[in-house]
Amino acid sequence: MAAATQLGALLLDALGEFERAVEAVPAPGRHRRIGRLNAPAWTVAHLASSVDGWVNVYAWGGEGDRWAGEWYERQAALSAGVALDTSLDDARAAFARIAERARASLGAADAARLRKDTVAPLGRWGLQPVAYLVARASAHLFAHAGELTVAASLVGAPDLGLPGRLAGVRDTPADETARYVARLAVDARHEIG
Image (cartoon, rainbow, N blue to C red):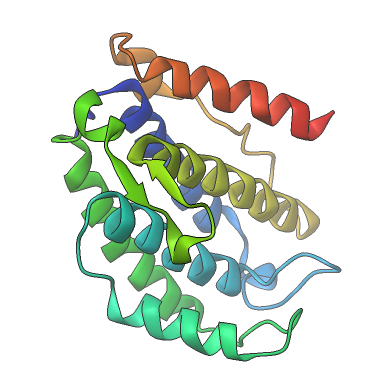
């Protein structure tokens, strides 16, 4: 599936790199926390829930994934800082469903669609362009892919070379959404340093 815009291509790249990072975590590190890192199963569930909400529900206006919604509600009911015990198999299955829905929407998501405003999650971010949610989802996926690669390296896996080739962004002709991609890179640089 190809994206109609560079911003859509960035989300496709981010989904693929996150999935690659999940698969790279060796068995000894898949089902437990290592130090202060999140357990990989929790991270996959967290990203399934956020991508579903931000992209499939708020950005595209679709129905939410039942598993992801229930997971989010159970997690939200816990005390701050307490992570919900999560099945990696269930989380991976939910993420696969959710990512497929997000990918299917990207082909029809032209620049005009990305400019449309939507009420962002739970009203926390107010009225935002759909592009903001797509960019934020991409950044969130890459951040947690990085977390998973750290967990993987601590149990012996080689470096994945994130963010990867970004072939989707590189192979998609420049369009007006490239400014969101550039802005995201500038914001990331400020956050790091």
